[in-house]
Image (spheres, rainbow, N blue to C red):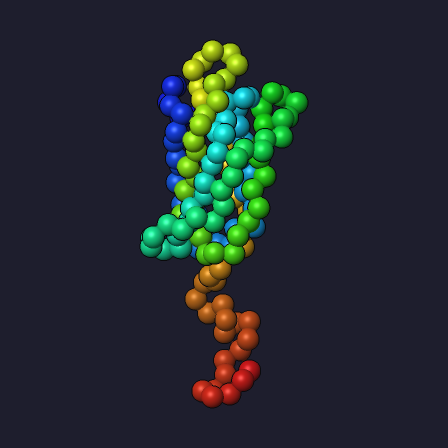
Length: 130
C-alpha cells in the first residue's frame, strides 16, 4: 500500500540476478488501484528502460480485489520498477488510492552457475565446435 492520500507511488523489486520476465500479475486491493502504470527495468544497475506501460485493466475477483495480467518482455531484468499514477480511492473511506497488495513475477533465469556451459556442452578445444 502507498501511504494514505498518495496518488502516485513506485516500488522497485530486486530479482537478485538477471531474468527474462515472461509475465507479471499485479494484485490490487478492491477499487484502490492505479489508473496508469509503467514498468522499467535494468539488468545490472544501468539506466532503467521502459518495457511496459498502460492504463489499468483490472479483472475483479470474488473477494472484491482485482488482478491485472502484464505480458512479459525479452530485455534482461534484475531490477523491476513499477510506477503507479492516478490512484483511485477505496470504497470504504480509508483514503487509500494505491492498494497494491502484491506482485508476482514469472520468468527464466539468464545466467547459470559456474561450469554450466561446460557441463551442458562439454569442453571444446580452441577453434573447434563441440
